[in-house]
Image (cartoon, rainbow, N blue to C red; front, side):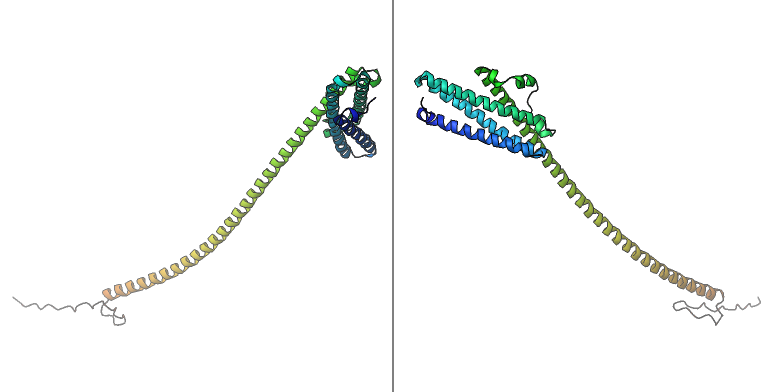
Length: 261
């Protein structure tokens, strides 16, 4: 029976990559058993799910390559390749079932997103790989991987929505901070304006008080002048009353002489 490298270098390379992924999955689930933190378990499951997606893709490539080589392979070689593919599918299905078992035990919301549709889950878990036909194994494996792909897409959508909400929240907080800064600046301006207005009112008050004193003094002077003028007019012969500059004394009265007719 020819080796894989003898049949096709690409087929041997794919087989090697699948073997590496299975080793990584085995080590990953062993590491998962030792992790107690649910968030770390979620991240570990997400990483293992990515490896299972890659393994599914490689198994499909292995199957296509095998079909391309059927025309030049003998029956024993074709049977060997088919059995190897079935073995890969069984091993992958066992890891998918193990992943689902861990995911169902986590209460974290992000891990719950990895859960695919619940319909038929009990039936799928009840089926043993040894009792399945080749077609059942392929269909079951493909369906489980499709569910995992859909769960990953939902997880990416949730992450993107969370990032968008965080970005919008940060923008809103920045806008509110800028608005508060503007309000503080306006309050400072109002306080300064009130202070200047108070000073101006005080200055105006002092000026008004000074103007009132001057007006009262002028009023007293005017009243005094008017009083002197009145007294001068009423009693012009009073020597005690000083003459007011600019005001001429009244003309002396003349006595009329009456001659007899």
